[in-house]
Every structure is written in C-alpha cells, then in structure tokens.
Length: 357
Ligand SMILES: NC(=O)c1ccc[n+]([C@@H]2O[C@H](COP(=O)([O-])OP(=O)(O)OC[C@H]3O[C@@H](n4cnc5c(N)ncnc54)[C@H](O)[C@@H]3O)[C@@H](O)[C@H]2O)c1
Image (cartoon, rainbow, N blue to C red):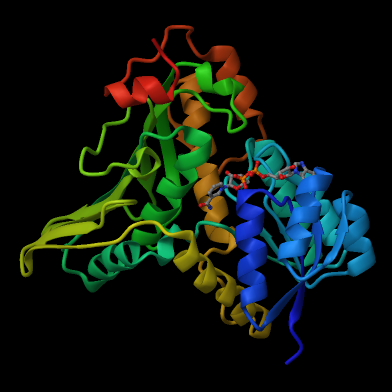
C-alpha cells in the first residue's frame, strides 16, 4: 500500500518525536516539515531523509496536500494550523495537548474539523505505557468493584499536565462526560510561561455515571517521594468499593483489590516506546473508519471542556455546568480574577521548580 504522506509543523522536541516515529512506520512518509527557525529546520531535514521544507505551514500544506497534517507547536497556536490543515485537504489532523487554551478556541477548532469531515487526534500518548495499560486493565476487569472515584495529581503546572491527568482518568472511567466542575486556583508566576497557568489548581468533577473526579496540578500538589523525576511525579488512578489501582508516570503501578490482594509492577513514561503505537493507530483509522483512534479529538475535547470548566470555576466561583454552552477566554478570566497572594507549596522541590523564594 502507498504510504500516507505527512507534513509535520514545529520541529522542536515533540515535532522531532512525531516525524521520526512517522518515518519509522512503513505506512507513513514525512514529505514536508515546517518551522520558523531556519537552522532547526535544516538540521531536522537532514535527519528525516530530506523532506520538503518551509517556514509557512499553510503554503506548504497547499503545495504538498498531505494526507496527515501534524503540528507540535506551543499551546498558543492552534486555530491557524487547523485552518491550514483543512485548506490543504488533510484526511487526519494530529496535534499536541492541550487541545486549546480557551473555550472560544476549542469551539472554533471543533467546528472547523467537523465541517471539513477530517479525523483528528490529540497526543495523550502516555497511555501506551505498560503501567497505564495495566491500571486500565484492572479497572476494566471489575476487580475494583463499583468505581466511585478517579483522580490525578501532578506537581507540573496546569497547561503542561492537567490535560494528561483528565484524559487518562477519563479513559479509566470509559469517557463518561462531565456534568459539572468546581475548582480553586492560586499563584500567578506561571502565567508568564509558554504553558501559561495558575501556579496551582485543584478541583472536583461530577461525571455523568456518578463517578467523582479529583484533580490537582502545580505547586500545591503533593510530592510523590517514590519518584525522582519531577515531571514524572504524576499519580493517576481509580478507586472502587473493592480496591484501588493507580500509576506514577515515572514510578510504575500498584493496586490493592479484594480478590487480588496487593500487586505492583514497573513502568516509566518513555517517548520511544509510546510513539509507535500512537502513530500505528493513525494508520489503522485512516485505513478503516471503524477503527477509531483511542486518542481521538472527541475524547480529548471532553477532557478539554472539563479543564476549561475548572478554570472558569476558579475564576468566577461556584460550579460550572458541562457541556459548556458559551465561549470564553479562560486565560483572561483567571488572570483578571486570581488573587495576588503567592501560592503555598507542598514541598521544597516545588518551591524551586516554580522559582519561588
Ligand atoms: N504529549 C506529550 O507527552 C508532550 C510532551 C512535551 C510537550 N508536549 C506539547 O507539545 C507541544 C510542543 O512542545 P515542544 O516541547 O515540542 O516545544 P518546542 O518549543 O521544543 O517546539 C516548538 C517548535 O515550534 C516552532 N514554531 C513556533 N511557531 C511556529 C510557526 N508559526 N510555524 C512553524 N513552527 C513554529 C518553534 O520554532 C519550535 O521549533 C506543546 O503543546 C506541549 O504542551 C507534549
């Protein structure tokens, strides 16, 4: 079969992961790459077998008409690349988390993709880790009894990490949609970051199947002393009437269940291992409409709405009903309404990572 052609935009860390993984899969061929940094573009082209290069993604998409338009730029750039993908006639659009920084942008993106009839996937690829898979398997086996709670905590800040926490815990909960969300936020030093975020956000979600979601992201989130790597201190899991199962992104999995006792195993987030199955599922979905990618936009957008509802609640108070019915700029709302009191940290390493005294 002829390989699917791919244009990759943004040749930073994640763009290179994507381009290398596409080229390593015989079902794909990277025919174009794009970056506004000419030196980076040239270095990437040499490593990727000399695809066509350009600094204007929309022009390159029009010229190459790729089957797959993949972009891995920073979170503030979404809509222009979705437009470029659609105008270039892409069958599948692959992009990085978070889906969008604001509900206004989420609504635009969803509308553009739906109108074009394109498939879309969002890179929540940690799920392919064996420890993530094991927790999912235990939850799905029924060994936890009636699942009543799913949760996720990360010391890394919101725009980096919350999308992952919500997506994997929603996966454990079979992607039941959220009904409402409520949260608080503190500290504004990370609004200046390229992943703009409050320093700490913590909140609750009611899911349609009655399950409670509990999330914490940032400087006030607890340390996981079992894990050395700071970005890997994420604890994501599920609790039921008969036990719990959870993973640490860089610290394996553990479970205690009524029938199985205490169990544990290894696992650490690894891009080299997680990218191939993520890419393969794109080929499977392009080949067969029934084989929908597990990281499809519909799932990711459920999580994005929850993430944005939590922010809206933190800015405006009270519970926020889901699905969201009006568009807003949650970044602006948070910046305007957050108190200027500094965040209180939960451990010394968080103080350092947030550049606090
Ligand atoms: N899924 C994951 O595990 C994971 C891990 C890390 C980062 N991310 C996400 O990946 C995305 C990219 O992160 P990164 O670490 O690769 O960033 P990066 O800064 O390394 O790369 C971004 C690249 O985009 C380029 N760029 C900027 N504007 C552009 C434009 N208009 N046209 C073309 N290129 C442009 C930059 O020059 C840069 O090379 C972010 O959304 C981030 O949240 C995901």
